[in-house]
Image 1 (cartoon, rainbow, N blue to C red):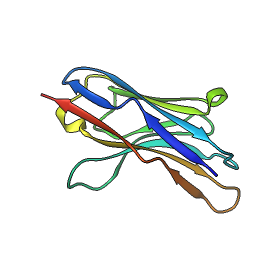
Image 2: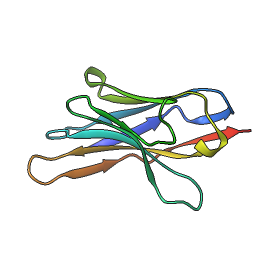
Image 3: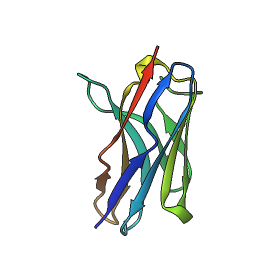
Image 4: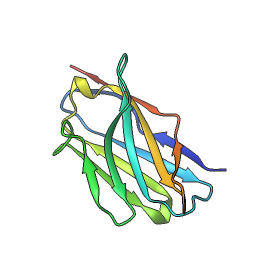
Length: 118
């Protein structure tokens, strides 16, 4: 059974930094991509950043230049380094892994709360 556990969230002042981690347990056949999403109160969940199996990265325009996604396959972990945080970054951050050999399968973590105070 695949489990994703996020950590590293918390309260930080505007301009500060946090690093989120997502630890994966269980076997995922053919990982296609890993990513971070976020959902602010009253808003839809949105993509923050993702990284493909080949290492290509993609970022939401709102976080480009401030956030960096990376992965360490030896530790089954994907990270999100967040710098220059803004109050609008406040949200629950979710980790997602996309796997599957024929059809894609999405796995989600339960989320970690990031609160940025202004």
